[in-house]
Image 1 (cartoon, rainbow, N blue to C red):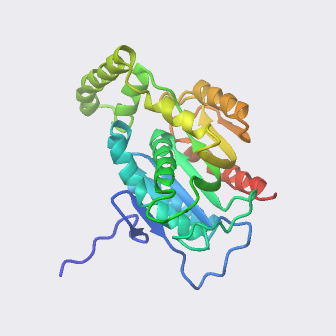
Image 2: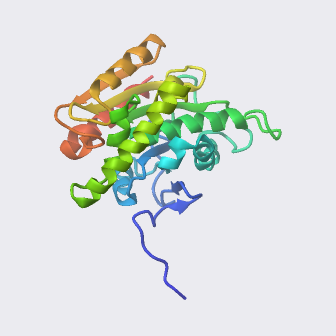
Length: 295
């Protein structure tokens, strides 16, 4: 028999192509009432699992008795909404199981004010997954004699390097972000420009939906997003999600009544803030959760 290959996510249960669940050992005591009932990590587009695992391990240290749910992001989810909806569908049941009395009853255990779910959304891939998760909850509501909550249960959101706004250069930077300088980048750049030009024509000329705007609008819709608070973590050197777009979105969120905090990192690039100052980064995350659960 071929031995099972170890991967950075081997300690998690694979629920689907995109969704993984970590359950703490039963020997670990029950969490304090202020710890998250569930941590949901929404990965950036086509992120290496080794990179995602570093976030998971930090949460295991911070909240050792909290289950952790991971949803991986991929380019296909951004381009084809049906794929994004399918990729996030397997996350619904674990969320309900962790945050309600019964996975099928949908009777919330949480108080109207205190969140039990901590969502950590990374880049546009995470923003995309969160958008599709909203829609999965809405679609599930009232079907097959199941009456769960119709939106993602009350939560705290960490937006790292998102939400951005679509532009020609955004497309080029997004498509080439993971390619190191050298001959591979030289080959990839013309293709990236061709794809960016195609989207520019479709969006500007034929009215194709700008998905970055679609996601941001949904995040700022109180009907879809039952959010206790959110914290934007962003950097001045981020070319894919420039600081000005994050700050504009925060203004819109406040207008809609959301509780918003901004955490700016000087000189950091896209999804690179945690590497620049990990102590500050994780202090921000913990403070965001502590402040929201002190209700």
